[in-house]
Image (cartoon, rainbow, N blue to C red):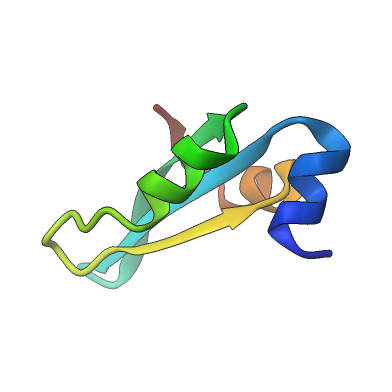
Length: 68
C-alpha cells in the first residue's frame, strides 16, 4: 500500500529516521496526523546520512526504535 493511501485510510502515518553506525541501525520513529507535516519532515535533511521513510504502524514497530 502506498503511504498516501495508508494515511487517507488511517488518518496517520509513521516516519522512521535511521542511520547505520558502528555495525547497527539506530534512529527514531515519529507519528504524523498531518500529511503536509509528514512530507516536510521526509524532505528535511539531517546532515548525517540518515535514511528516512514514511511507513505503516506495523512496519514502524518492527524497527524497534525510540519514539520522538
